[in-house]
Image 1 (cartoon, rainbow, N blue to C red):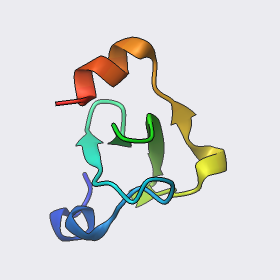
Image 2: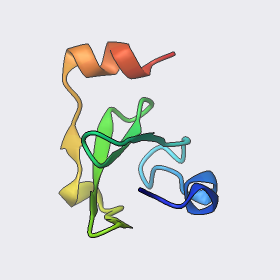
Image 3: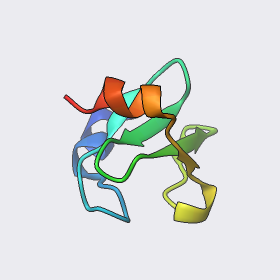
Image 4: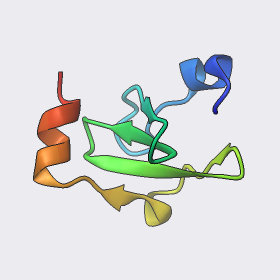
Amino acid sequence: MIDQKLLSILVCPVSKAPLEFVADKQELVCAASGLAYPIRDGIPVMLETEARELTLEEKEQYSH
């Protein structure tokens, strides 16, 4: 679980858009950039090189 206070201040380093926590995948997702940042040992890894690109299905799911 990620701290809600931390989540409220984190933004995507690429788009500067807010992130959505996906608990079952332990990722922070940015719909704007289409990237998912991993959370390892409770620590968000906010590096573009470590992020994975969202699938088309995921992009549709997270774009509200």
